Amino acid sequence: MRESSTDFAVKIIKLCETIKGHHSLTNQLERSATSIGANIHEANYAHGKADFIAKLQIALKECYETEYWLELFVKSEIIGCDIAKDLYNQCGTIRRILIASINTAKEKQ
Image (cartoon, rainbow, N blue to C red; front, side, top):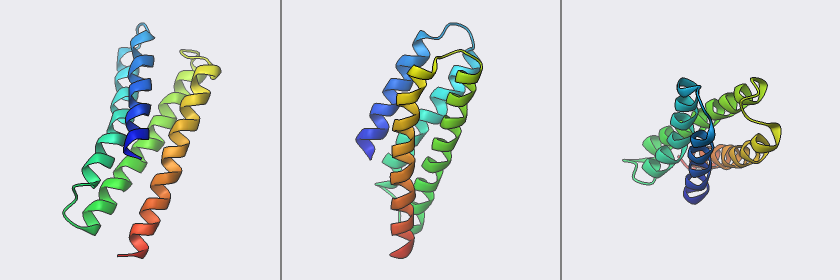
């Protein structure tokens, strides 16, 4: 999960470097996408099960936010559907893993 979220963040950073203008929007996309991996990384060093779950829940919220920004970029024709499709899929995969991890951690709590 850590590697997937890092790879995803790198793709988003590279995408944002290609977008001219729209600095405030690309900033939001970069912030939410890179926060996913940062929170997953932090979860590995959590102070306990509750802290671990909380970090993963933050990462999950950031996934949903990132999906919103990608949708906005597509609908605004800032990026094409072909570019967004891979990113949607990668973000969705991370989201599903996060949900499963959160549910498992809650069951074991």
